[in-house]
Amino acid sequence: MIFEFVIVYQQNSDTNIRQILIDTLTLSLQDNYDEFESDTVAQMIILQTQRIGNQSTNEDGNTTQTIILGFTLDLPEETEEAERVVEEFAKALTEETSPISHIVKFEDPLLQFKLAQWSAEIFAIEMKLRRVLTLIYLNAYQGVEPYKLLRDEKEQPAAKDKPTDKEMQDALENQFFHLLFSEYVNLNQRPDPKINDLLDNIRNFIRYDELQAEITRKPVQDSYDADFLAALKNKIGAIEKMRNCIAHHRRPSSRTEEGYQNAQPLISQLLDEYLERWSWNEAANGSSDEESSS
Image (cartoon, rainbow, N blue to C red):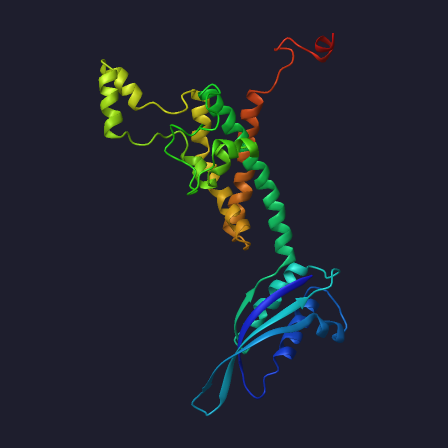
């Protein structure tokens, strides 16, 4: 398992940075019941890049050199509690007695594995969500202009070069594939009416109640569908935060992870309940495999 780090440390005549790394790793392994030969541990630390910074001299006349060092930690696959070993190793390197003042971790196969698991879960959620939204909006417009399902929506695909009907048709997609994850919660909101549109409505509707109904009309008017869209607002945020961490390959905070773990089953349940409401009922549709084959 390869982990990549960059550190900043102050080097003087007595500093052996490689030995400091080896000794710190040895303690982290031992604290987690991993026993390796000293030569084996030494081989786990591989110095990779070095950039020499400025020199400084303190009041006692001691000179130190700032060094930016990149190194690889190559842990054997059989390492017990590998995640804890890496965490404790990195934390120990920046203790007060250490010449190391800063450390950043980059390549991390354990984090990569976790992110891949979360990514698969979120892929399933977003595809199911797009499927539900497609059912809602195809019904709202009765299948008319299926590549313009957001025609009455304030929220629109953010891309400068918006997909054409032909491009979506070829990709077997629709406009929901081109919304940002955070934009799903803003659906079922019409943009503020333009003056010309408002004047046209005033001319077209004689009665005030009809005019008011048109002005306040939602793109999705079915009450069950509208309630579903409203219910998304409290659940999407936590999923989006985790999705952003995955997209940018960074470790989610404990709060982000906890929020995701709470929201993920709730939004999955919400989607499943919606799809169950419209599940195919063979008996209700008066057909069966036997009837269709006869």
